Image 1 (tube, one colour):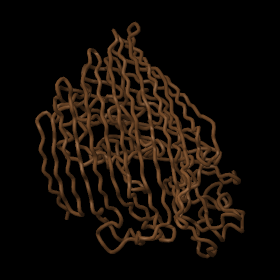
Image 2 (spheres, helix red, strand yellow):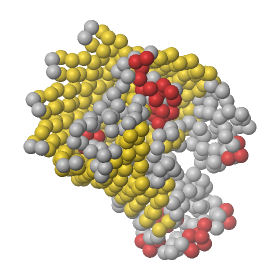
Image 3 (cartoon, rainbow, N blue to C red):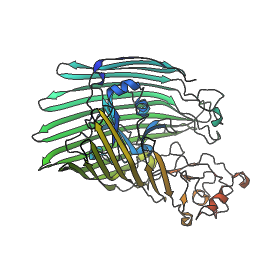
Image 4 (cartoon, rainbow, N blue to C red):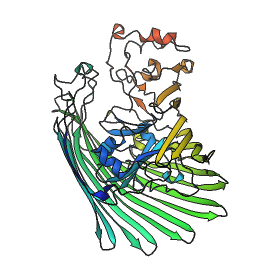
Length: 607
């Protein structure tokens, strides 16, 4: 029996009065980050208008994105809801709010389950090689959120497992200005357990998932207006939450993680400006983000005895400037963006519980480029070229590393074979630089730093066929392909490809080829989920009880295994090495002193 949710919804008629992209149905909304132009060609886009959001009655942005073609929302091992476009990695999809990125730079992602849907006036998801305004790190897709600019809405929901959601948002005139206010409180006592037999450890015999409670309160205020020809809008968003993270119930409690977030706070202030200058148009967005969280690690599922604490404080400032102007029949669009983020981290081991000095990590990102919209009769062409750069001038107690940069380029061609028929072909290359957490983070002793990670480079291609008759539009994407590659001294090269045939869901096919240090002859195509690394490169005389393994995903670090015990007998190991020996090129590890110590550690886990 499906649990019932009682909801009350009040909305003004203007609540859905949001502009939409004339190329697409009403459910698709244009973005404020990369505005449409008469000659501009975009990659495929799906989205929801304000009216469609009212019909869905989502509690958060995560709920609103569920069900969109080519978009999935999953909960990671830290309890965060993250968006994935076409099966991409969770850090390969960026989330923007009124033109400013929401991701916490240290981690490269943001929990969209904590962003209330009430303040959103519309959203769009752009797939493929995005526009240059989005800058670096948007290698698979972009989720662009626009705040409410008309009307109002109030929602009250209650349901089983302690579910509560109270939300109100409204836009009101204030002289010649427009004021937007929104407030939301959401809470849950626990998540339901779908199948108790799948949780053999650290889960009581109950239909409530252990340690999955959540309470979050968010406030938003925005003010916009005009000053002569200048249009401006300033806003601030604050989200304050505390929650638990479900224990790792698929493994022995001796190696499982038991975490809680007693304090999670994100505040972001931003301002957007637009000014026509003759035939040209200048746009600017500036943002400042403050983020803080505390992670408490416990020794067992009772959540009473602390093992350690991690305290994070982040301060980020960034901006983007774009200038578009005609040049002959074409239009040029210049873009320059930059971001600087400081991350202070304090790790407290218990015992003794003494708080050491905080470590400072600093990362800067910069992107610049130009796009050209070229009309070719009934055909439109958009070409882009840019350069992305990342530097880490402060690396805490870890070794420094050089700045890295990579070029980006794209092309999109729009054709009209017939009056109601359109064909768009696009492709390009985009870059993603590893976040500081991927490079230097240890996650309370669960991960090994990997400062040698190089940028990801994704090659993307799309073809989209559209047919329009009045208000009816049919859009087909018969094939969408992408490939990404990254490498590092730790030794890995991974290539993935995806194929999508609507209306079915995306099908991800991945073929990884990983090189283990000290054992190049073990190179071999491996399964889509990589097993534990051969023991020779992961065990040493100094680390006999920590068999480090490769996570098997692009741009991730070596991870401590889920099941590894000191001095375990050889008989305790499953028959994995004979299986690996049957794979072409794989051999049983030659290090005889290592094999009896580290047993097979299960499938690789995402960091």
